[in-house]
Image 1 (cartoon, one colour):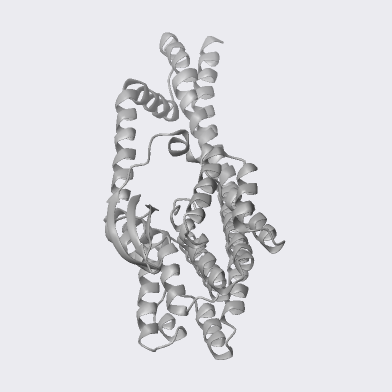
Image 2 (cartoon, one colour):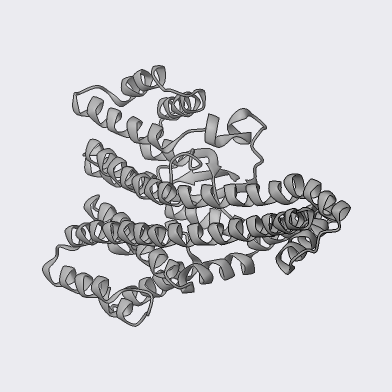
Length: 402
């Protein structure tokens, strides 16, 4: 997060915050947002509050912004002034954090800023994509249309993310339960049985010997194992925060079998959705590509889009540079070529976005349907191994007693 003071095109000094990974990125984003000159730019640490400590519970949620956009569009379309509409929406905002944001927007507007400029002061809530669509529709005189477009886009993105989370929730829960049951068996149920076997001098099969050795190792070195796991997790998290770690993870996401194709098509779905929406809002193609690059979450795809943009500015068109990269699917390249020829790029990309959204959902469902039986078999084998390891010595003891 960076705090900035900038000079706008209409000769006004504006202060605000911008969410960026570095100072250079923040400065570039401000110039692209329409600020003529950046007077000061420094890193800002947000004050500790429930919203910053627990953003998932107390911060502004995506659904809040979607509802706000649709309601504001309806009020503006009904002839209500934007200041009055914001005051009404502030009174009925579901969370205190969002009420503060809307109150800040009202203050910005009363100070003479446009609505898009006011939004850009809260980029931790309103993304650059949101601000750009609002700015374009505001300049075209159809702000309510832009608000509805960006609300629909956010709704689709939220629905796609929700489907992925719901699909992966069951396998993750089953795996965690299996690990918990295994740890409880070898730490709680097994030690008394080991004492019984030793006292009776039972002959232990190889499976029981392996299980006892594993249980002894876990019990005797549990603190070392916990510390080792903790250090390993911290090391992985720290590495993934580095530029090289992020790049490595982005490469793995695209090259891992099955998961790689899902990630590629999910990124293509996002690219088609955002470019279609921005083109409908009336933004020029180079600016659309700028925003698509900024909002791409994968660095490999971001670099590919940057290459496409550079060649686009050189006059090579849009489909030809895409065809030169292996990341862009052939269907996307062919449809973009058709859109270029017919002048229907926005509707073509909207159709492609729906297609890739369905494809991603189908592939995730297929992956989950493959994971579930695999986990069932693995858990069944582990349970069978533990059961045999415990029951076999008991039969041996009973035979010796008889």
